[in-house]
Image (cartoon, rainbow, N blue to C red; front, side, top):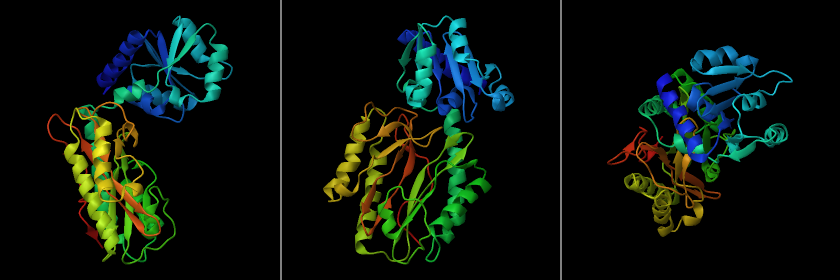
Length: 358
Protein backbone atom coordinates (compact mmCIF):
# COMPACT_ATOMS: atom_id res chain seq x y z
CA UNK A 1 0.00 0.00 0.00
CA UNK A 2 2.95 2.37 0.57
CA UNK A 3 3.79 2.32 -3.15
CA UNK A 4 0.13 2.75 -4.08
CA UNK A 5 -0.23 5.78 -1.83
CA UNK A 6 3.02 7.22 -3.15
CA UNK A 7 1.62 6.96 -6.67
CA UNK A 8 -1.53 8.78 -5.53
CA UNK A 9 0.54 11.57 -3.98
CA UNK A 10 2.50 11.88 -7.21
CA UNK A 11 -0.79 12.38 -9.06
CA UNK A 12 -1.58 15.27 -6.72
CA UNK A 13 1.91 16.70 -7.22
CA UNK A 14 1.41 16.52 -10.99
CA UNK A 15 -1.88 18.34 -10.51
CA UNK A 16 -0.05 21.09 -8.63
CA UNK A 17 2.27 21.58 -11.57
CA UNK A 18 -0.58 21.56 -14.07
CA UNK A 19 -2.50 24.21 -12.15
CA UNK A 20 0.47 26.41 -11.25
CA UNK A 21 0.24 25.79 -7.51
CA UNK A 22 3.34 25.61 -5.33
CA UNK A 23 1.59 23.39 -2.81
CA UNK A 24 -1.72 22.52 -1.18
CA UNK A 25 -3.22 21.87 2.23
CA UNK A 26 -5.85 19.13 2.47
CA UNK A 27 -8.22 19.06 5.45
CA UNK A 28 -10.75 16.43 4.36
CA UNK A 29 -10.04 13.32 6.41
CA UNK A 30 -11.22 11.00 3.63
CA UNK A 31 -8.74 12.65 1.26
CA UNK A 32 -5.97 12.38 3.86
CA UNK A 33 -6.77 8.69 4.42
CA UNK A 34 -6.71 8.06 0.67
CA UNK A 35 -3.25 9.58 0.32
CA UNK A 36 -1.58 8.47 3.55
CA UNK A 37 -3.58 5.71 5.27
CA UNK A 38 -4.02 7.93 8.34
CA UNK A 39 -7.45 8.54 9.81
CA UNK A 40 -8.26 10.64 12.85
CA UNK A 41 -10.66 13.36 13.88
CA UNK A 42 -8.32 16.17 12.83
CA UNK A 43 -5.27 16.70 10.64
CA UNK A 44 -3.78 18.57 7.70
CA UNK A 45 -1.83 17.18 4.77
CA UNK A 46 0.67 19.64 3.30
CA UNK A 47 1.88 18.69 -0.17
CA UNK A 48 4.42 20.52 -2.33
CA UNK A 49 5.70 19.51 -5.75
CA UNK A 50 8.47 17.56 -4.06
CA UNK A 51 7.53 16.85 -0.45
CA UNK A 52 4.69 15.74 1.86
CA UNK A 53 4.08 16.61 5.53
CA UNK A 54 1.23 15.30 7.70
CA UNK A 55 0.30 17.64 10.55
CA UNK A 56 -1.52 16.08 13.54
CA UNK A 57 -2.02 16.85 17.21
CA UNK A 58 -0.28 14.96 20.03
CA UNK A 59 -3.02 12.28 20.20
CA UNK A 60 -2.13 10.93 16.77
CA UNK A 61 1.63 11.36 16.38
CA UNK A 62 2.56 7.76 17.16
CA UNK A 63 -0.31 6.30 15.16
CA UNK A 64 0.44 8.56 12.20
CA UNK A 65 4.07 7.42 12.14
CA UNK A 66 2.98 3.78 12.25
CA UNK A 67 0.57 3.96 9.32
CA UNK A 68 2.31 6.45 7.04
CA UNK A 69 5.94 5.28 7.31
CA UNK A 70 7.73 7.43 4.71
CA UNK A 71 5.75 10.63 5.31
CA UNK A 72 7.14 13.30 7.60
CA UNK A 73 4.96 13.99 10.66
CA UNK A 74 4.69 17.42 12.30
CA UNK A 75 2.92 17.92 15.61
CA UNK A 76 0.49 20.79 16.09
CA UNK A 77 1.42 22.83 19.15
CA UNK A 78 -0.19 25.79 20.91
CA UNK A 79 1.01 29.16 19.65
CA UNK A 80 2.73 27.56 16.66
CA UNK A 81 1.34 28.03 13.16
CA UNK A 82 2.70 24.93 11.44
CA UNK A 83 1.11 25.73 8.07
CA UNK A 84 2.66 29.20 8.07
CA UNK A 85 6.04 27.72 8.97
CA UNK A 86 5.79 25.18 6.15
CA UNK A 87 4.75 27.83 3.63
CA UNK A 88 7.80 29.87 4.63
CA UNK A 89 10.14 26.87 4.47
CA UNK A 90 8.95 25.82 1.00
CA UNK A 91 8.57 29.41 -0.30
CA UNK A 92 4.93 28.97 -1.19
CA UNK A 93 3.26 31.80 -3.09
CA UNK A 94 0.16 29.97 -4.41
CA UNK A 95 -1.45 27.49 -2.02
CA UNK A 96 -4.34 25.22 -2.98
CA UNK A 97 -6.85 23.81 -0.50
CA UNK A 98 -9.81 21.44 -0.58
CA UNK A 99 -12.43 24.09 0.00
CA UNK A 100 -15.34 21.78 0.79
CA UNK A 101 -13.49 20.66 3.93
CA UNK A 102 -12.09 23.96 5.21
CA UNK A 103 -14.16 25.70 7.88
CA UNK A 104 -14.63 29.44 7.53
CA UNK A 105 -12.62 30.20 10.68
CA UNK A 106 -9.67 28.19 9.35
CA UNK A 107 -9.81 29.97 6.01
CA UNK A 108 -10.09 33.35 7.76
CA UNK A 109 -7.01 32.54 9.84
CA UNK A 110 -5.04 31.54 6.75
CA UNK A 111 -6.11 34.69 4.91
CA UNK A 112 -4.90 36.83 7.81
CA UNK A 113 -1.68 34.99 8.61
CA UNK A 114 -0.36 33.64 5.31
CA UNK A 115 0.85 37.06 4.17
CA UNK A 116 1.63 37.33 0.47
CA UNK A 117 0.25 33.89 -0.32
CA UNK A 118 -2.64 33.40 -2.75
CA UNK A 119 -5.20 30.87 -1.50
CA UNK A 120 -6.69 28.87 -4.37
CA UNK A 121 -9.67 26.51 -3.88
CA UNK A 122 -9.10 23.17 -5.65
CA UNK A 123 -12.83 22.44 -5.79
CA UNK A 124 -13.20 18.63 -5.75
CA UNK A 125 -9.89 17.80 -7.43
CA UNK A 126 -8.95 15.03 -4.98
CA UNK A 127 -12.45 13.57 -5.03
CA UNK A 128 -12.20 13.44 -8.82
CA UNK A 129 -9.04 11.36 -8.53
CA UNK A 130 -10.83 9.04 -6.08
CA UNK A 131 -13.74 8.36 -8.48
CA UNK A 132 -12.07 5.41 -10.20
CA UNK A 133 -11.02 2.58 -7.94
CA UNK A 134 -7.77 0.62 -7.87
CA UNK A 135 -7.86 -3.19 -7.50
CA UNK A 136 -6.96 -2.96 -3.81
CA UNK A 137 -9.87 -0.58 -3.22
CA UNK A 138 -12.31 -2.89 -4.99
CA UNK A 139 -11.08 -5.76 -2.81
CA UNK A 140 -11.77 -3.71 0.33
CA UNK A 141 -15.22 -2.73 -0.94
CA UNK A 142 -16.00 -6.39 -1.63
CA UNK A 143 -14.96 -7.28 1.92
CA UNK A 144 -17.36 -4.62 3.24
CA UNK A 145 -20.15 -6.03 1.07
CA UNK A 146 -19.41 -9.54 2.31
CA UNK A 147 -19.65 -8.49 5.96
CA UNK A 148 -22.88 -6.58 5.34
CA UNK A 149 -24.45 -9.44 3.38
CA UNK A 150 -23.71 -12.02 6.07
CA UNK A 151 -25.01 -9.67 8.75
CA UNK A 152 -28.26 -9.02 6.87
CA UNK A 153 -28.78 -12.76 6.45
CA UNK A 154 -28.12 -13.22 10.17
CA UNK A 155 -30.87 -10.81 11.23
CA UNK A 156 -33.43 -11.30 8.45
CA UNK A 157 -35.51 -13.53 10.71
CA UNK A 158 -36.04 -10.58 13.04
CA UNK A 159 -37.84 -8.66 10.27
CA UNK A 160 -41.32 -9.76 11.26
CA UNK A 161 -44.51 -8.35 12.76
CA UNK A 162 -43.95 -7.26 16.35
CA UNK A 163 -40.28 -6.31 16.00
CA UNK A 164 -39.45 -2.61 16.19
CA UNK A 165 -37.40 -0.66 13.67
CA UNK A 166 -34.81 0.15 16.33
CA UNK A 167 -34.42 -3.51 17.31
CA UNK A 168 -33.71 -4.49 13.71
CA UNK A 169 -31.25 -1.61 13.15
CA UNK A 170 -29.38 -2.32 16.39
CA UNK A 171 -29.11 -6.04 15.69
CA UNK A 172 -27.95 -5.40 12.13
CA UNK A 173 -25.25 -2.97 13.29
CA UNK A 174 -24.08 -5.49 15.90
CA UNK A 175 -24.10 -8.33 13.35
CA UNK A 176 -21.92 -6.33 10.95
CA UNK A 177 -19.30 -5.92 13.67
CA UNK A 178 -19.49 -9.62 14.50
CA UNK A 179 -18.91 -10.35 10.81
CA UNK A 180 -15.67 -8.37 10.82
CA UNK A 181 -16.74 -4.83 9.98
CA UNK A 182 -15.38 -1.79 11.79
CA UNK A 183 -19.04 -0.87 12.10
CA UNK A 184 -21.85 0.41 9.89
CA UNK A 185 -20.72 2.73 7.10
CA UNK A 186 -23.64 5.08 7.87
CA UNK A 187 -26.63 5.24 10.19
CA UNK A 188 -28.74 2.21 9.32
CA UNK A 189 -32.23 3.02 8.01
CA UNK A 190 -35.20 0.83 8.89
CA UNK A 191 -38.52 2.38 7.81
CA UNK A 192 -41.72 0.38 8.01
CA UNK A 193 -45.29 0.92 6.85
CA UNK A 194 -46.17 4.58 6.16
CA UNK A 195 -42.71 5.61 7.42
CA UNK A 196 -41.32 3.94 4.31
CA UNK A 197 -42.42 7.08 2.45
CA UNK A 198 -39.58 8.92 4.23
CA UNK A 199 -36.43 8.11 2.20
CA UNK A 200 -34.02 8.65 5.12
CA UNK A 201 -36.21 7.88 8.11
CA UNK A 202 -34.45 7.19 11.41
CA UNK A 203 -35.39 3.85 13.02
CA UNK A 204 -38.04 4.37 15.66
CA UNK A 205 -40.05 2.42 18.20
CA UNK A 206 -42.77 1.59 15.68
CA UNK A 207 -43.62 -2.10 15.59
CA UNK A 208 -43.75 -3.82 12.20
CA UNK A 209 -47.15 -5.01 11.01
CA UNK A 210 -48.44 -7.65 8.63
CA UNK A 211 -49.18 -6.48 5.09
CA UNK A 212 -46.62 -3.68 4.85
CA UNK A 213 -43.16 -3.06 3.42
CA UNK A 214 -39.97 -2.42 5.38
CA UNK A 215 -37.11 -0.48 3.76
CA UNK A 216 -33.70 -1.48 5.14
CA UNK A 217 -30.77 0.62 3.94
CA UNK A 218 -27.47 -0.53 5.45
CA UNK A 219 -23.76 -0.83 4.83
CA UNK A 220 -20.54 -1.95 6.48
CA UNK A 221 -17.11 -0.36 6.75
CA UNK A 222 -14.05 -2.60 6.31
CA UNK A 223 -10.43 -1.43 6.01
CA UNK A 224 -11.66 2.13 5.55
CA UNK A 225 -14.03 1.33 2.66
CA UNK A 226 -17.80 1.20 2.57
CA UNK A 227 -20.71 -0.81 1.25
CA UNK A 228 -24.25 0.47 0.67
CA UNK A 229 -27.30 -1.64 -0.15
CA UNK A 230 -31.06 -1.28 0.24
CA UNK A 231 -33.57 -4.11 0.49
CA UNK A 232 -37.34 -3.79 0.83
CA UNK A 233 -38.94 -6.66 2.74
CA UNK A 234 -42.65 -7.47 2.41
CA UNK A 235 -44.42 -8.72 5.52
CA UNK A 236 -46.88 -11.27 4.17
CA UNK A 237 -49.29 -10.24 1.44
CA UNK A 238 -49.01 -6.53 0.70
CA UNK A 239 -51.65 -4.26 -0.92
CA UNK A 240 -51.83 -4.13 -4.71
CA UNK A 241 -50.49 -0.57 -4.80
CA UNK A 242 -47.31 -1.59 -2.96
CA UNK A 243 -46.94 -4.66 -5.18
CA UNK A 244 -47.25 -2.42 -8.22
CA UNK A 245 -44.57 0.03 -7.15
CA UNK A 246 -42.29 -2.82 -6.04
CA UNK A 247 -42.39 -4.25 -9.57
CA UNK A 248 -41.76 -0.82 -11.12
CA UNK A 249 -38.81 -0.05 -8.83
CA UNK A 250 -37.28 -3.47 -9.41
CA UNK A 251 -37.57 -3.12 -13.18
CA UNK A 252 -36.09 0.38 -12.99
CA UNK A 253 -33.18 -1.02 -10.96
CA UNK A 254 -32.53 -3.74 -13.54
CA UNK A 255 -32.71 -1.18 -16.35
CA UNK A 256 -30.25 1.12 -14.61
CA UNK A 257 -27.76 -1.69 -14.08
CA UNK A 258 -28.09 -2.86 -17.68
CA UNK A 259 -27.45 0.65 -19.06
CA UNK A 260 -24.58 1.55 -16.73
CA UNK A 261 -21.72 1.31 -19.20
CA UNK A 262 -18.35 3.05 -19.44
CA UNK A 263 -18.67 6.11 -21.65
CA UNK A 264 -22.32 6.83 -20.83
CA UNK A 265 -23.15 10.36 -19.70
CA UNK A 266 -23.95 10.17 -16.00
CA UNK A 267 -27.00 12.42 -16.36
CA UNK A 268 -28.25 10.13 -19.12
CA UNK A 269 -28.29 7.14 -16.77
CA UNK A 270 -30.37 9.15 -14.32
CA UNK A 271 -32.73 10.16 -17.13
CA UNK A 272 -33.24 6.56 -18.28
CA UNK A 273 -34.14 5.24 -14.84
CA UNK A 274 -36.18 8.30 -13.90
CA UNK A 275 -37.97 8.22 -17.25
CA UNK A 276 -39.03 4.61 -16.71
CA UNK A 277 -40.67 5.52 -13.41
CA UNK A 278 -42.24 8.68 -14.86
CA UNK A 279 -43.78 6.74 -17.76
CA UNK A 280 -45.60 4.57 -15.23
CA UNK A 281 -47.07 7.56 -13.44
CA UNK A 282 -44.86 7.75 -10.36
CA UNK A 283 -42.31 10.41 -11.32
CA UNK A 284 -43.52 12.79 -8.60
CA UNK A 285 -42.79 10.13 -5.99
CA UNK A 286 -39.15 9.57 -6.96
CA UNK A 287 -37.32 12.69 -5.90
CA UNK A 288 -33.70 11.68 -5.22
CA UNK A 289 -30.82 10.81 -7.53
CA UNK A 290 -30.49 7.38 -9.12
CA UNK A 291 -27.23 6.69 -7.33
CA UNK A 292 -23.76 7.79 -6.27
CA UNK A 293 -20.20 6.61 -6.01
CA UNK A 294 -19.06 4.52 -3.04
CA UNK A 295 -15.57 4.08 -1.66
CA UNK A 296 -13.88 5.61 1.35
CA UNK A 297 -17.08 7.60 1.82
CA UNK A 298 -20.49 6.02 1.43
CA UNK A 299 -21.55 8.97 -0.73
CA UNK A 300 -18.82 10.20 -3.04
CA UNK A 301 -18.30 11.18 -6.66
CA UNK A 302 -19.86 10.64 -9.06
CA UNK A 303 -23.33 11.75 -8.04
CA UNK A 304 -25.83 10.18 -10.44
CA UNK A 305 -28.54 12.76 -10.90
CA UNK A 306 -30.13 15.00 -13.50
CA UNK A 307 -27.51 17.76 -13.21
CA UNK A 308 -24.42 15.52 -13.14
CA UNK A 309 -21.51 16.24 -15.46
CA UNK A 310 -19.10 13.74 -16.95
CA UNK A 311 -19.32 10.13 -18.00
CA UNK A 312 -19.17 6.76 -16.32
CA UNK A 313 -15.62 5.44 -16.32
CA UNK A 314 -14.15 1.98 -16.02
CA UNK A 315 -13.50 0.98 -12.38
CA UNK A 316 -16.02 3.38 -10.90
CA UNK A 317 -18.12 1.78 -8.15
CA UNK A 318 -21.62 3.24 -8.10
CA UNK A 319 -25.05 2.50 -6.68
CA UNK A 320 -28.27 2.14 -8.62
CA UNK A 321 -31.10 2.87 -6.19
CA UNK A 322 -34.49 3.90 -7.56
CA UNK A 323 -37.36 4.31 -5.13
CA UNK A 324 -41.02 5.25 -4.99
CA UNK A 325 -42.43 6.82 -1.83
CA UNK A 326 -46.20 7.15 -1.36
CA UNK A 327 -47.26 9.43 1.54
CA UNK A 328 -49.37 7.69 4.20
CA UNK A 329 -48.96 4.35 2.40
CA UNK A 330 -45.30 3.33 2.32
CA UNK A 331 -42.35 3.04 0.03
CA UNK A 332 -40.02 0.78 -1.92
CA UNK A 333 -36.31 1.34 -2.57
CA UNK A 334 -33.94 -1.23 -4.05
CA UNK A 335 -30.21 -0.59 -4.22
CA UNK A 336 -27.26 -2.47 -5.65
CA UNK A 337 -23.59 -1.58 -5.93
CA UNK A 338 -22.20 -1.87 -9.45
CA UNK A 339 -18.64 -1.94 -10.79
CA UNK A 340 -18.25 -0.26 -14.17
CA UNK A 341 -16.04 -2.48 -16.32
CA UNK A 342 -14.72 -2.37 -19.86
CA UNK A 343 -17.58 -4.63 -20.92
CA UNK A 344 -20.82 -5.23 -19.03
CA UNK A 345 -21.49 -3.82 -15.54
CA UNK A 346 -20.76 -6.14 -12.64
CA UNK A 347 -23.20 -6.24 -9.73
CA UNK A 348 -21.20 -6.47 -6.50
CA UNK A 349 -23.98 -6.81 -3.94
CA UNK A 350 -25.50 -10.22 -3.28
CA UNK A 351 -28.97 -9.94 -1.71
CA UNK A 352 -31.70 -10.79 -4.22
CA UNK A 353 -34.08 -7.96 -5.07
CA UNK A 354 -37.15 -9.86 -6.21
CA UNK A 355 -39.86 -9.70 -3.55
CA UNK A 356 -38.62 -10.94 -0.17
CA UNK A 357 -41.60 -12.06 1.90
CA UNK A 358 -41.42 -12.74 5.62
